[in-house]
Image 1: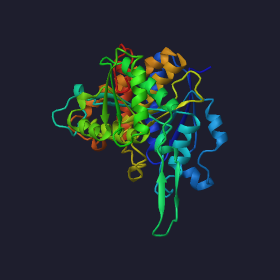
Image 2: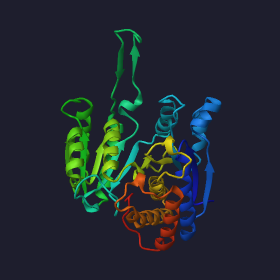
Image 3: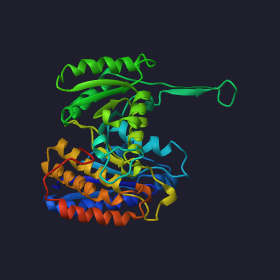
Image 4: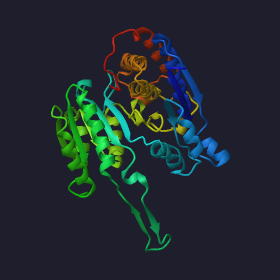
Length: 374
């Protein structure tokens, strides 16, 4: 039996290109830790939808449950209506597999340029925990009187004590494992007095079980301001689904852009319904697809998260060690971007992959250390 049974979904645009480079890095890393990998590439995405009218069926979700993890490249193309792939693939995976945690590291890598003046890697090192299966993303609501001057549209924010508490407990565990042991709740309790108050009340209750974790609360608008003015305030952040979407992308911007933004959609429980799904968040970038111009760092960082988080969930230390090696390779390569934007570095997708493989060969045997998915 393989150490990792991996499904890959290249998807659309630059997705297949960055996944290819991540798999090259995996192929270079796995033998150094004695890992055997079974891989299956799945054709889900825009091209399949245009050909067959299908995005992701219930039977295909069931089939995904036999894998240990999924690496996804990107979803979206201009000739598919907005929402078809996002709801039919991304959100369906999150809801049907109960991937209730969206984990986004936000660390400034050595050499990567940030738009914030005078900020260094020591100033920007955070972990963001976003609830992933509730809130506005449930799609509760509707439209009436369409096409008339009296049209009405509603979209409802949902929060359940069960969903909020399991997300908060994961966040407290994550904060407790980090050196600073500091957790900030982000919401809008002064206006969203129902959902926000539920989050705040449960946050205070759960905090009692973690006396060694220092806590704080920020309104989401204040959080956005502090991310730009003083990101060193933050260590671990936890928030609901919609605010998490906004805050994590802003954090990616101050860490150098979407070209380095990794993510994991997790069900970290031992009895999870199926695999967790890991993906870069830069989108499909159809304007540069097929040009070897995409930066694969975000996808490779997502691979590092995949190895680390899957290894922890399945109690396979070799996978965790391999994830640490990929993180170290990323940190070793990042100084080559000094003074350049990640999306305009002048290096091609394959060249960056080559550099990461070389770094794996040089650093794989080094002691485990902190990286972008720590």
